[in-house]
Length: 145
Length: 67
Image 1 (cartoon, each protein chain N blue to C red):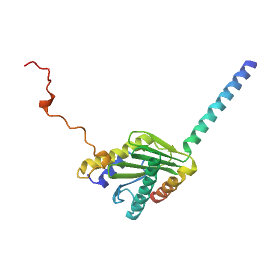
Image 2: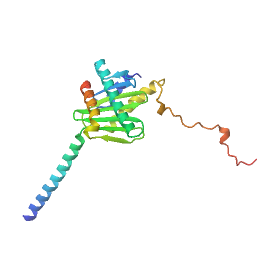
Image 3: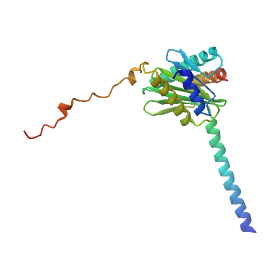
């Protein structure tokens, strides 16, 4: 599945969505529901700047990694969701069902990442669980000889 | 007759209070704001103009571009 197919599926399941752009952290646009490519690139640039502002604010407050944001405006809402190196920016009409929109956007990015496993996760998401000990070392030592 | 007037007054008063509460709640929901979520599920809401305005400006631009 490519980004365009993921967006098509997203539009099918999310009736609240007006538009969406999938892009990478560097700003490269992978897919968009907008008709003009130039506009999609501008949306990605603005969304990346929005993300940078939000991340700097979170750093000022000494808290953890950014996951997602919603900007509620009178004319509609703007959502930015990150998943590893992938990002999605989306717009909805005013007063959307926020939880549902976040869920749909995150699912879209997860599906896309699952379809492209070669994409590397970010450092914070790269932490592996503790290695399992070999079976031999799990044997109880109090066993009778 | 008197008890009926009293009942009408009570209903009107209660209706006004409920109406005001709903109106205020709706106004609060319509306020422009920025909600930032982090990985652990915590959220911070920026609602004061000085902290939210730079992000609101960018979001308005995105809405314009995506329209």
